[in-house]
Length: 329
Image (cartoon, rainbow, N blue to C red):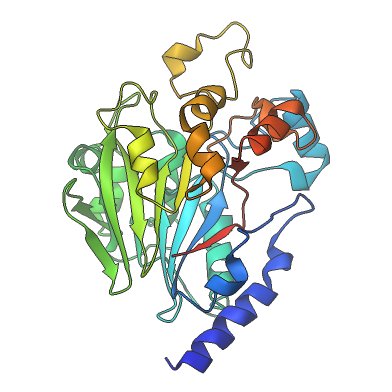
């Protein structure tokens, strides 16, 4: 694709972006405009909520009630789209219960939502076997679009879980998906311009282990860890890992311990945002790495854009991830 054609595709996609957003501010990274002309690789935020979404099923807490009354306050389940724009290629990171809407947003971004077309991701990358991260695979099956050998990249244990437990095993047996084991040590090239590495992180690993990912473009890197038990139990230093990248989208499930009275949050896992602010505050204030919180539980105090929790996050140099954000790598 010639440079002029590439820029026209990108410009046209960006021009259509407001139609994809809700009334809640979906502010994009500050550098977006210049990076449009600098990189062919882009990561798009397709969802930012914890596995149950916002509003959550049957819940009428203040955040869920507001999300029911104001659709712009609702959030899809955490997911990313990885794009090689000139190739019009799209890779889905986590298959959520909101996969139909999220794939449509990705295809819209690439201008591939034409009448009569059948479009799917080039591959799916899976972090782990909790409901918000893999159950969207069902829509690739016989009862829905019935894909053929769609690559599903995951850990060895996750692959064994899918192959040996119904209904997921039917996807494997019918060859709707083909399982590819990820190496924890090697970079995987998705296209000549876009690659990823996976790393194991501690979490509640009932059915599979849990992965985080780093996405590499031509110039920049993005770290994605939506689920982790806490930063202290990881064998790696989150401070050092964040230093290595330009963007970090990190587990922000709970703002603090007061959110779910009567539940032991230590058993649920996840580092509190307040802990991450202290641990990573110096890096955020320096501004070399832009740090965003994602995988937000419906109870999260930071969801209120006018609340003190959100204001504190932004004062410290952090931000919440928002659906529609685009990071050019």
